[in-house]
Picture 1 (cartoon, rainbow, N blue to C red):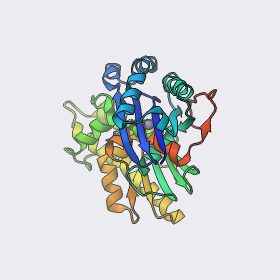
Picture 2 (picture 1 turned 45 degrees about the vertical axis):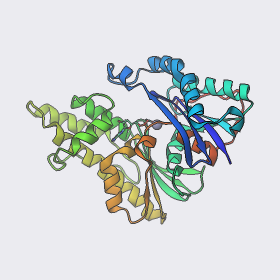
Picture 3 (picture 1 turned 180 degrees about the horizontal axis):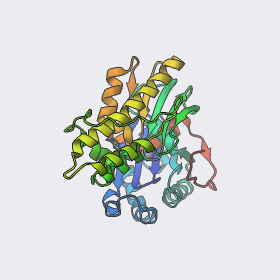
Length: 321
Ligand code: KG4
Ligand code: ZN
């Protein structure tokens, strides 16, 4: 039996979890800083780092005691080392290094994007090969996984990430931060055909969302108050989800892969899930909602399926490697 403690501080969630054999969550604690950052309309990196520092030990203690495991039971300590905010990543990594040394357990450095994909191994029997659509606040990619750790990027966004587009459009519509859940919710009351927004024409498996954001902004400028916010949200969401599904299904068909996997915060989106379920000719996996957005269970799962011990002088990275 393998037991990993996962630690995640790449952005504004302080998280720790204990996962058995990469598939069974024994505990998962996520302390969100959303309320702290809401007043600024987005995450303030320095504030986020300070908050992580205040809470990281507590969150790790809670995860360990909720799982009823002691340090000697652990196979290793898995920690997100990037991509993310350097200042926040360093808090989680420093805590993990200290525990690795004090408890004499190996440290496993985990990539945040790979961890999002690995959230799909939890409570399932999923195995590679598959095509993954990774849609988060900072990334939008279609990746072909032939094994647990070898992901080949087939396409990605050339400008804004899908989650970033959600957040920017939500701000434009006065829906606050974070925008994804707000637009998701409001869209169910709107008419998705009310406005025709462009998909962003880029070849192959790449995406572009900045034109869509501009189109929404131009439309808003021309409309009089009160804005038909639900119709705007639903029409924007329709354009985003349509292109995400179309290109992912194209990749799946071109490669002849028999499984599709959704990952990242935007994978929580109800319309995206519904479109895939309605249109995909092959099984589609997506994590349960709490494992789509940032959490530490996915980090522990990633350590189990694709991790190896790291040296204690390892650092963090802000951009994808
Ligand atoms: O994966 P994640 O928690 O953090 C990053 O690694 O970026 O993703 C956060 C992003 C945010 O942009 C947020 O607005 C978006 O995921 N998001 C959603 C939904 N829930 C979160 N977007 C659309 N629909 C949702 N239900
Ligand atoms: Zn994330």
